[in-house]
Length: 121
Image (tube, rainbow, N blue to C red):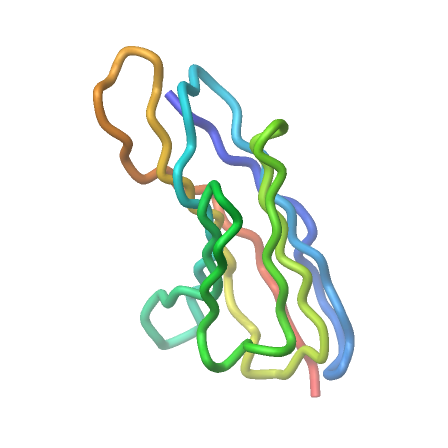
């Protein structure tokens, strides 16, 4: 199977920055897309940013120009640099990977345990 371990959450004041990182490990054959989702309090989980193995990126409108996603294919890691943070960015952030393990024919979604990001006003 595949394990995703996240790090980098915390408490920051509005206007500040945080960097989230996620490392995938396990019996990985290949990883297609990787991304970050968030679950704000009282709302549904939403896509924040995603990146393909080729480096194409996609962002939620609410974070464009403030967040940057990147990945290292050799290390199976994905990061999210978050700048100009706002109180509405407060959420639990989850790492996602569409990965195929060695003994399976197709990829499926794997999720990290989540990391809390709190932005104070």
